[in-house]
Image (cartoon, rainbow, N blue to C red):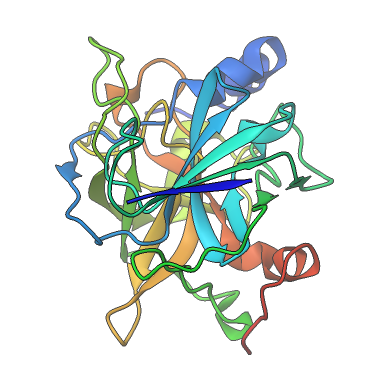
Length: 271
């Protein structure tokens, strides 16, 4: 149903932490830290997902019928309220807002909550989105599956909380630009067990930008040659102790899952 409204490696520590409270690790890292308020129309692909009424994650529109998000956000959920075309998190009277209520999800069959591998999922909308202020984001082409991203700058966006002292979600969409680093550098923080070829790492130790609670599942994008945005990652996993520790953060690399996305949605892949 749709409604429209006008340091040293920490691998041992991380694996133990996952075994005891994996879900809380993910939930603690989904907000924008050090970000700016988005302008109207700046992120036409951004989705906000209210999950079983009580939880919240980000998402990204990849076709007029499908939203991509993180598996850890929805793997154990039953119902979703998807907000598209929004700048404000809770304003149901916002002009251009589309709200879709759905229960149709596709979680990657290999997702394991004890790690960040295969942290990707799809939600199917009940009705096709067709509004000028809402536009799916471009996905990488098949030929870009192995392109090196280290050294580029990714842009992430979301409504997550923005500091550790007052962990309240932002009512306004925020965004921030984050440097992408090599997976080898990221292993210095997380250890090799949590970093794979399907991971993207972004940020720096003791940096000042990143995501936090409410942002996971949301998009990391880069500009293509036509100055349009291309989805390269889904916010997945951050340092477990606090969002503002500013260790590098882990994103699911969408190029690794292009065939899975195509097989479970109406997206047509580009060579």
